[in-house]
Image (tube, rainbow over all chains, first blue to last red; front, side, top):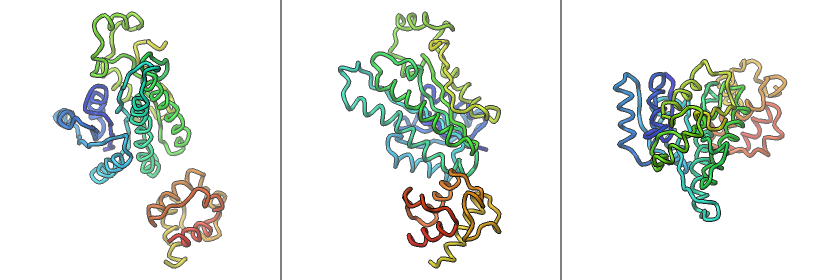
Length: 242
Length: 79
């Protein structure tokens, strides 16, 4: 059985992806602080007949990333599927944005995904098979007020993913981006009903997205059937970016 | 380590990691023309060398390496 490593797999979209991939892969649920929640996700997968484990990883730290991969490789040979999902927000309008707010978001969301992808690639090259999926955001395509740092980091993932797809195509490694719109998670829980109504008005599909809307697409991109899709950005946003 | 020992290790990596026919791997063999290793393949071999011999190879040092023999000599000088 192939192994899929989902960073930020204890909550929200990452949790839904971990559970969905549990149908086809051994899933390693990556977490930074929420160990209990990560364990619950792993238990969910196992109780549904799948195979799962957890690993602590701070993706903003290359040594932590290396340790996490080394421990996965010790137990399960290699990471065949990498889901770069972990991310943070530090929202502020640009004139008020602190340097640290900028740097922290870029370091975790963009540089962190560089660390994990670089670490994952070498064994994938050797195996001549791999899938890397980046969870970006519609704001990486359209921008968003108060999110210059987050939008820049999510746009950066698109360039990273496309470059990997060109470098690694000859080794059967695909690299794609899924760009969620508004999805019902902790990260969007600050939205009140009025905000939600305003958002829904802009959508073609008249509802806020569910984490499962994302995990279904991610699961498809991890399958054998999707091997001819690489370097693409797939918005899953109810038509928001149309 | 003697040069011929390095050569044997290098040959092993070519055969195991890149699936190249053992008889083709000679000191004179050209990496691209004779062994049909693409640029990504050379990167793979270099990374395998680095792991096997616990050394680091700079990109500049690689620029002049076009044959198995040159790779063996570079590695031999580093170990």
